[in-house]
Amino acid sequence: MTGMEHYFDEIVNIIERLRAPGGCPWDRKQTLETLRTPITEEAYELADAITRGNMDAVKEEAGDVLLQVVFVASLARSQGAFEMRDVVRAICDKLIRRHPHVFGTADARDADEVLRNWERIKKEERREKHEDLSILAGVPDGLPPLLKANRLQGKAAHVGFDWPKGDSAPLFAKLDEEVGELKEAASRGDARDMEDELGDVLFMAVNLARYLKVDPDAALSRACAKFKARFQLMERMAAEEEKDGGKPLSGRTLEELDALWDRAKERLKH
Image (cartoon, rainbow, N blue to C red; front, side, top):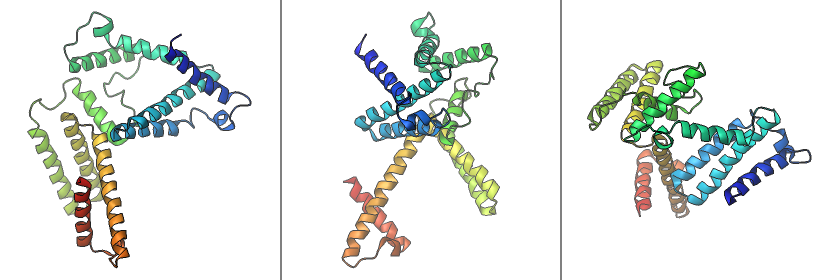
């Protein structure tokens, strides 16, 4: 037994111990339904750690995600559905089946061809299971909208429904067009049209990000982090100035707040 197998068996055994009679009351109370929220939260926390580039946090959060997978398998085993070895076997079989250019005789000249082969094999699998054969069928409805938009566009691109490569100008033009339509809706004051047109702007922005090979979720996460850091610095700067008789943050005009924002932005640069 390798060291890795030892550690993996250990986490499986720990979860089984926690859920056994005399174990942890909280763990014994959980169901597949109650784990849905923790699974989502842990995945986001891992993604956030990756965005921040904190490898210690990535290690910790990856462990938390693994914990959720092992927990799910433990619950399924108690229901007689499947167990952890079935989960591992299934993903190993899938990886081998969907990489015929590595484990078989197929050829794949580049990453795009790998993705096309992947989608073709997935479609064959769905046909065998009598499932929806649409290439978009594999995109869960429950995904967050930003991620869902990216996945839908990427799936369509796998079969060639994409913008021409090598020229991003048409995408910027389309984004400008969508913004123009949003402005028109806003000028009319039509709430439903504004929602529709704003959705088109966001969808096109995601499309542009995908074309530029920028992760839109990571980009927006960084923008949120940047805004948070600048605003919190504004709060600290205002609090320091208030000690010397300056205005509190909430008592400043918009022009004064903008000036403070610019100062905070400049200070963070250094």
